[in-house]
Image 1 (spheres, one colour):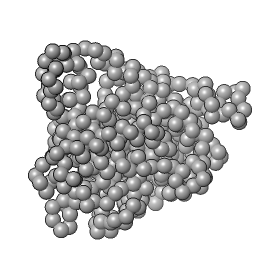
Image 2 (image 1 turned 120 degrees about the vertical axis):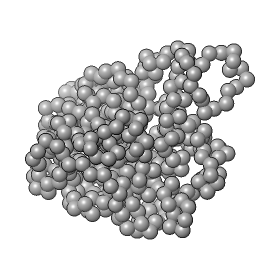
Image 3 (image 1 turned 180 degrees about the vertical axis):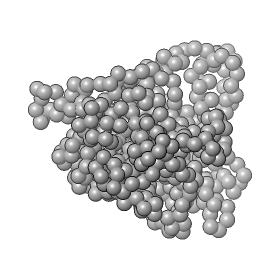
Image 4 (image 1 turned 120 degrees about the horizontal axis):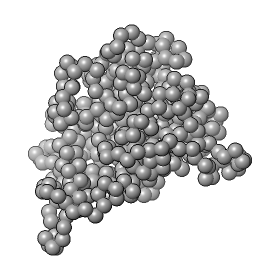
Length: 435
C-alpha cells in the first residue's frame, strides 16, 4: 500500500438467507462491518494476502478503530458524541489498530464485523422483522460457529480469499479458535487473546445469573418488550454490573475503589433498601451504577441474552476427540496472549491451548503479560499487548517481541503442562474498562 492515510470504509452488506446451527433461519442476514487499509491479495509478510480479521468481544462492535480521516461522517467526535452518532461502542481497540500501530493499517487490510445477534447494525433480535416489528424473541439462537460462517461469507463477498491473520480477545478469541477449527486452510496466523477453549463452571454461573436478571425484569415481557413499548433496563443494568465484576481483578478493584465512600450523587437504577440511610454508599457502587447507566443506552437486552448463550455454548473440542484434534488441520502459526490477573480466562487456560496447538506441531508461542488489572487488560494495556501482536503478524513465533512461556528447560514432556515458569511482560495499573 502507498500513502500515509489508510482508506476506511463502514457499511452494512447482505449475505442473503442464512441457516443457523441450532435451527431457524433469516431470509436476509445483514452484517455491519468496517475496513481499514487496502486489500492486496499478493501482499502481506507471506505474499499470500494482507487481510487481518479482528473479532470483537461480547458487547463490542465493528468499530475497532477510529477513522483516519475526521471528515468521515459519524467519526472524529468526542467519545460521547461518537457513541450517539454511530449508535455503537466507541473504537474499542484504537491503540492497537491503526496507521503505525501494532496492527498497522498502512500494511494490512483490517476487517471487523459485528456478529449476528448483536445490535450494532448486524441482524439480531432488535432488527426489523420481514413481517413488521422486530425479531425479538423469535430470532434464532446464535453460536460462535454462526459468527464464523457469516464472517467467511462476508469476506468472500468483499473479495478476500485468504486471511493473513485472525485476532480477537475474550469471546472474540473463541471466534479466532473457531476459524482455526472451521477454516484451517484460510488463515496463516491465529492470535487468540485472553480466551479459553470453553467457559468454566464459575463463568457459566455468572452468565446464567446475568440472564436471569434480565428475564426477571417485568419490562422484559418474555423478550417481546419492543412490541409492548417497554425496555428491561433494570435487568440489563444488573447483568452489565455482574459482567464488570468479572472483568476486573481483586487487586485492581482494591486499588481503584477500596472501601471509599461515594463522593457525590449518581442515580442508581435500583431501589434502595430500608437500612440504606444508615450506611454509606461505596465508590464501587457508584462505578457500577455509572457503567450500567451508560450501557443500557447503547445495548439491547435480548442481544445480551443471545450472545452470552453463544459464549456459554462454545467448546473447541465439540465434535472432536479433544482440543488438539479440533486444531489438527491448521497449518499456520499461533500466538496465545494471557494475563496473570485475569480470572475470567486464566493463564492456565491459555497454557492448555498452547499445549493443544503444539500437539499438532503448530509453531506456537504463549506470551504471558504480568498484570493485576484483570480480564480488561487486553483492552487497556496496549503497551504490553501491541508489541507481541505486531511482531507475530510480521514474523510469526520468531518475532522479536514474542515471548513463549513454554516449559522450563529441565522439564520433560510429561510435565510440560504443569506449572511452567512463565516469562512475563510487566504490566501497568490502568483505569479503563471493557466497552
